[in-house]
Image (cartoon, rainbow, N blue to C red):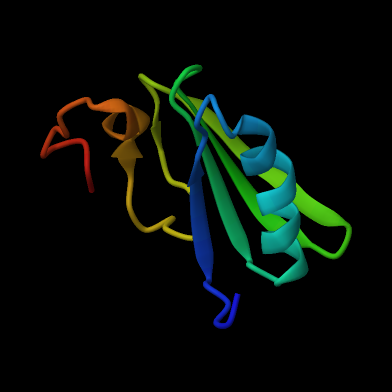
Length: 94
């Protein structure tokens, strides 16, 4: 990476799952990316991670059907299902 992002979101693909979960996460950590999200379409899960010197710390795991506030976007409450194709409810996103 030439410019460190403040946040990355990795969407797992069946053909690259190990690379997405291991090699890319190590690169993000080594580069000092403060926040990493991992979206697993197959399991319909979101994992939110925060950088620590030892490695990424999982701060939230959420699934379709839940409404969350996830760092670094805690000001926004939103339904996890929108990551998996659910229509956003105008009332749900605050």
